Length: 304
Ligand SMILES: Nc1ncnc2c1ncn2[C@@H]1O[C@H](COP(=O)(O)OP(=O)(O)OP(=O)(O)O)[C@@H](O)[C@H]1O
Ligand SMILES: [Mg+2]
Image (tube, rainbow, N blue to C red):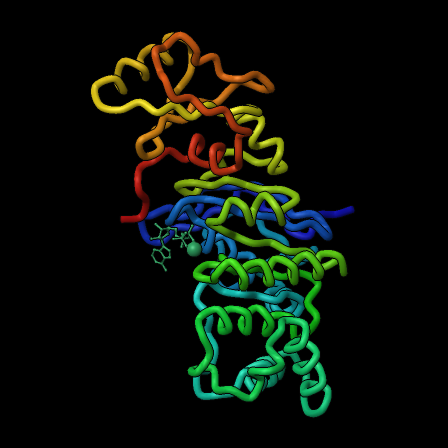
């Protein structure tokens, strides 16, 4: 089957800054595709090009088999888009926000009303449907902005950090809803900073930083290739730290600082060999996507 999104040498420049640096990737039909990357990595820029909100500087990009430069109107009609910052109308009720939005897609009158009620129900918003958006909590607003993207039954949705700022309950609710939509065959492309979200929802991930792709694959494959099956957490404080880091380097391991601890990743299925270094407190645990992400993208802060 043809990919739903195909990016080839896709580039976006803002003046002298290259936000997306000739990346190539595909999104396949029906999959949930995740973009991971630190602040300023180029996730939003990439998704805005996919949503035909911002044109590429160079390279090729097709969405649902259509060219973003020549067929932007048709692409916009077929997509649902949830931006990083929701553009809800604060003076309208939750339900009217959905109905007004649906007009752009030709849904009107009782059809739009019935669809709004269906979507509100699906996203657990029925009880608040008459409330002004201004009176909703941040989490409810986020859910409403996701609900809005589904009014016109899109074949594909693009969600930029759908659960940022949500409490664990709301986040889980959104995850369930996204999993249901996937079951219905909707293709999902999303960005996130939550590794658990990426690991549990996404079939395939691309990790980007400074506008470039650092790694891609299934969550399991990324973890295993980059952080191995097992990670050792070593508690080493003060001047001991430098000695242990050096001793680990001699054994071919890179130590990653995590607060007061050092993380050491194994290779493939092996446990990292950290015995005999004079470290009293060592805990072994399965490696996680967060381990892989930090190993790939390093520790310095971004976009400051
Ligand atoms: N409209 C713009 N004009 C100029 N520079 C921009 C613009 N939009 C984004 N940038 C810059 O492009 C780079 C990529 O930004 P982008 O918003 O795509 O990152 P991101 O991965 O979505 O980050 P975050 O996790 O913080 O949302 C950053 O350096 C950012 O400052
Ligand atoms: Mg962003």
